[in-house]
Image 1 (cartoon, helix red, strand yellow):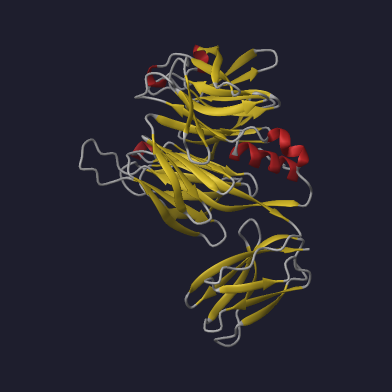
Image 2 (cartoon, rainbow, N blue to C red; image 1 turned 180 degrees about the horizontal axis):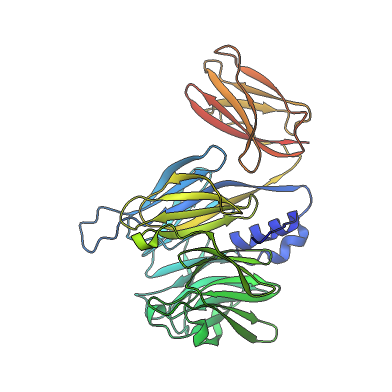
Length: 449
């Protein structure tokens, strides 16, 4: 089993690479007074595919809180499939067949939405939303929109076919071009973001057929090339050097699926209907089934997956495309931690990473919240929690960033409005305090110094 050792700086780098494009050069500016945590995991459910109206099943969105382990539906897009979710700051951008929608992940409310055809994957470059396109689009396989109101900025012409994932390196934007289900070779389109025009297409050859994901690894662009449907058990990854304009394809005797995440020198990728690991320094498969095949022989598949680089957790959506499925939450070793119910065809997933500046107090609690105040924040030896006087508190629990409950307090009395909790023995860091009461629950975060 491959051991993956991460420093805090490497975890930060992975967060920024996953969340948005063009920010990697800014990491050197990140100070030591910043911490990161996972606020929620956002899933897109395509619903049951329907061939003709009246349509009864639509795209639904849901959020999962890894601390409270509560999952809730929060949005519906009235179309037939979801392609991607990209989280930038507090906003989630969603592509769903013929629509692009923007949601505020703090309020879980839709901000705006626009109609567009053949939308596929999402990226962000300098405040512009980059959208790759696929069938039924016949030209303009990439579109640029404003991240604020989703207004059209530019259509990029000249790309030869259906596009998939997007990445930026230096002053260029790169798109994976696989040509759709009839594609015979892999290509990468290079776009100039100053003019939003196609510069060239890089031909990667037939061994890169099925190119889908793009990652940045040691200054090079790494692509995951999905095994075409019905093809022999052979997948590949390609390493392209933008400095020398050279590339190399690496072949593997497995059925390759979508990439899940690149973490340090290890690529988590779907293979043989499960999730395996390719160790990039040696270009060898280190594990073929870190997450095993959930039952493809019985038509149960992994429909999408993500990897939390802060807490080393897999989030793996599993289902049969016909009935509601579930998301498996597993640790780095692949062992199950928990699971939660999802919808039908959970084909998109994203992790909402947030940044907290240590030493700056949190804003006052929402007046409508169970928790009225939590202080001092940062805390040193104790924290004082005030709740509404007419609320009966059942339990107060402190969780660390991994979601592990590390301290519990059952208040004495039924209507005590304030509670003092000793935190002197907690290591310095970011924590979550969850209050379970007769009228519901609430979570607040605090810093222990």
